[in-house]
Image 1 (cartoon, rainbow, N blue to C red):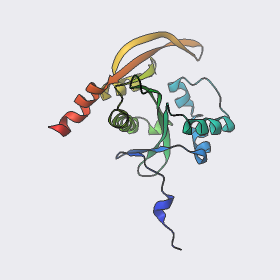
Image 2: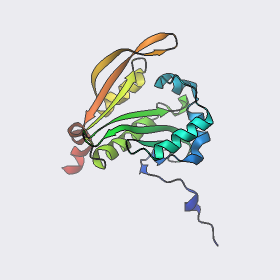
Image 3: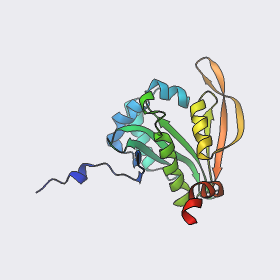
Image 4: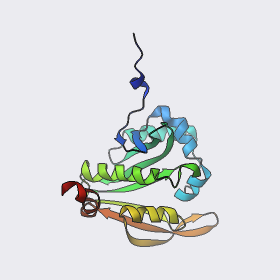
Amino acid sequence: MSHNPKADRPVRFLEGTKVYLRPVNSTDTEAYYQLLHDADMLRLTGTQHHFTREQIERYIDSKSQDSSSILLLIANAATDEIIGDIALQDISDTNRSANLRIAISAARHQGRGYGSEAIQLLLDYGFGIRNLHRIELNVYAYNERAQHVYRKLGFQQEGIQRDALFYNHEYHDAILMSMLEHEYRARYLAHTTS
């Protein structure tokens, strides 16, 4: 029986040029555990809890049963290295809305356009496949790079949640941003329909 090298390749659920997004499964427990313990990522996401491998494994298992969210790993398209994760959470079919969150690990992966492309892939999926009307996100005020990226991608600031996060001995504001389907279509689909 011959070996099929394609069988060893990870599933590429949503694919861009720099990154692809793939489902997370129980074999990813160790990689996900390492992602969650990157010091810079913890600060930028405001993560306040420590997670054990067992908790991560249960979390991954619970996500596979959760129809109100989709959790995907972000992988480098050239190397298959896992560089972060992205999720649509609190998906409401009634309101056609969801919350987006993303985390890119390690400073060496940041500022290279990986996060922007991952978000665009998930926006395409959210608005084009899941038929969402609104996708929102929260970003902490001290994460100016992320705010810049979200604005560049077309997210609009809606408001500020004052002192929403207590982290590293002080309170920080959270900024609520969103994109509506007509804004997405005007920005990303206008050139393909003309």
